[in-house]
Structure formats: C-alpha cells, structure tokens
Length: 460
Image 1 (cartoon, rainbow, N blue to C red):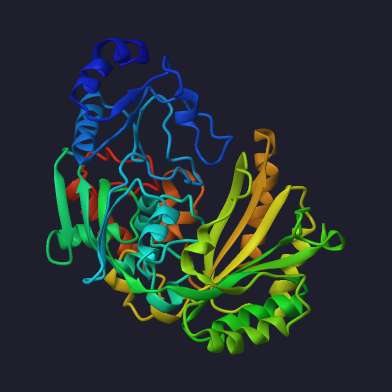
Image 2: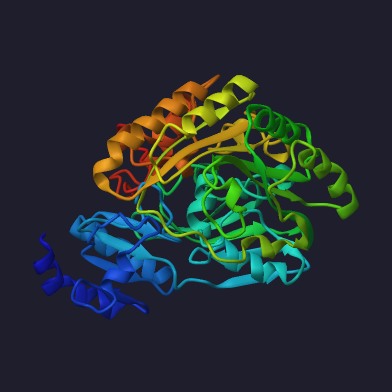
C-alpha cells in the first residue's frame, strides 16, 4: 500500500482508536518527530504513533500487521543502526509512556519504557536507590535493557538485565503478555539480551539497589601505551565497587580541557566507586598515580548527578564495532594510539569497558547475553558528517577492531551498526542463536519485529 492511500484510508481510522496521537508528513512537527540521535539518519515514516499506553501499542501493532508495514520502535532514539525510525513504515514512539511506580520498602520499581535512564535514575535516586543503566542520561530504558545494559554499576550489581524482575510486552498478535522467571520463562530469557526481536516492551519491573552517594566522575590522563595498559589493568584488579570505562581518543577543543592538550592522545576515564568514600580514595589513588591528570573531576556526589549536565552534540553518523577481549598489553595500547592519529574522523575513540565482578557471577546460559566470562568490552568508533565518507571510516574502524580482537568472536548487540541480516549473529554464539531463533518462531513467526538487530525465526 502506498503512503497516499495509506493516509487516505487508514490513518484516521487508527487515530480514532488511540489515546495518543498520529503524526504524518502533513503535520507540523513531523520532521522533529522523525529525527533521531544520529542526525544523519534521514528516513520518512508513513506515520509516527505517539502512544499513551500499552493499549495504544497493541492497536498500533495490529494496524501495522494488517497493512504489512515495517515497524520501528523508539524508546530514546539512540540506535546506532538507525532502527528507531522507518523509511515508509510505522514508528511506535514510546516517549509519552513515562509512568513509574516505586516500591520503596520492597525495593522494586515498575517503569514504562518511554522513560530515559536519566529520568528514571533521578526519580528513584530521590529515595537513595538505583538501577544500573548505561552512561548517557538520554538513552531510553527500553533499548538498553533489552540489549543487556553495561554502565556505571555493572561490576557491583550486574548488567541492567540482572536487575530485571518482570516485563510487560505487546506481542506480534497485539496481545499484552507479562513475563518473568516463572511465566513465559523462554520469552523472559530471550528479552534479557536478545534485543527488540520479540515484541514491544511497555513496562519493566526492576530491582532497586541502595545507592545514594558515590565517588565518581571524569579523569583525563595523557594517553601513552603504558598509561592505557596500566589503567585498564588497575580497573580489572579493582574491587567490584569500581566500574569504569576508558575512552582513548584525541583531545577535543573543549573549554574544560587545557589548550596545550588539544589534539593530543588522551584517556577520558569515567570511574564510579559505589561504596565508602574513604575506601574510594584508596582505590582511585593508583589511577591518579599513573600520570599527572590533565583534568580530575572525580568527587563524592549523589549517583543521579552522573547523568546530569549537557550532552555532546549529536553526530551525523558513526562507524562502530564492538567485541570482547581478556587482556590489553602495551603493544595493543600502542596500536590504538597510533591508529587514532591516522584517521581524519573528527571524533574517534577506542573504549575499554572492564567487566567481571557481578557480571561474571551470572551463568552465561542464564540470559541471552552470554559473554559473562569475558574481561572487557571494546568499542571502536568514528563519527563523521558526510555520507560519502562512510567507506573510509568504516574501513578504519574495521581495521583497528581486527588488530585488537582476541579469543572467541562476539559483539555487544547494543553497539552493533547496520550490518544487514548477518549483523546480529555476531552477538550470539551458535547455541544461543539457535535458541533465540526458536523463541522468535514461537512468538513472532512472521518476523513483524524485524527492524532491529534481527534474529529471523527458525524454519517452521
């Protein structure tokens, strides 16, 4: 069905059934509504449904299925591959669904999936509680939870999915299911790391942890091979209370970075110690001893402050690879620094996120995120402005990733770019992939939910 007949015959009928609203190309605000985090993604959906509740989601899903429309699901709009918006299809925009029911005594919260990590964290943080998400406040809790969730608390309390107790999901037939460890346990297993393949998650129930004040923030160090390798080693050997990531990049001309450092290799380390402040100082001392910090913003703070403040400008596009390694020696660190200076990308980074701790104490087969025993998640990325530069930057990212990879193959589904039909398989070894395919066949046999890192249903 083409867009003109779609609009003439069907969109008003859909609007009449909704508590939310429908936006089309004829409406003021359409261009803003179709814009996602990566500004160079320029797709024109036939309709954007700003849902008000799970009933709206169900009606939108049934409508899209009847018309055989591609379905994009948008929580925060940060999909690296652009999966938050469709070309010619239907976008289900969850941003209006921000209900949050906090059980302070029971230390749980039911959260609708239009909430961002920052908004959720601020609300529960008012009670001295937290659930661990990622490192960016504007990311939607829907996408990061379904992908796994690596962030500021993962070594202490596990991935986001390790705090997930239950979910409510609109399935491909429009039915709303509640799932947990005892109800539809196969679906619950798949949701924890399998991405958006199985339905539209409308609410999550999370476990809350007692996290009020932490010691954390950014420390910028000069990037030499010795400092990079030693910093990562210190983080791997640190207590579980310390979670951190090390962004090896070229210093941008930001006001808080001294001018003499601009254009030089640096480590932008984000470190968070979720524990006693005196103990934090002892744990953080070795990082400060690696080299004289260029910037040291680490201090005691309330946990929600980590998500506050302005975010950097949205890039037009990004080339990205993610994979897992277990060691980082001086030679590999030297390779990173050398290659960062051998590209024209205005922003390039190699990020090391140290795992272990509570992440590794969950059995790999317990969830669809199976890389529990790996020591580090590595992300190589290059942001750029113009589409004609894509091949150059994709080649640079792929080359550096290939030079650093070690051990069994794997990728983090949340940091996969648009790699077509074979992309998602990188995130799952064969037994996990086959189990996910079987669950997909049970709950979405026609692959309605395919605009994602897609797991096609098993044959039959």
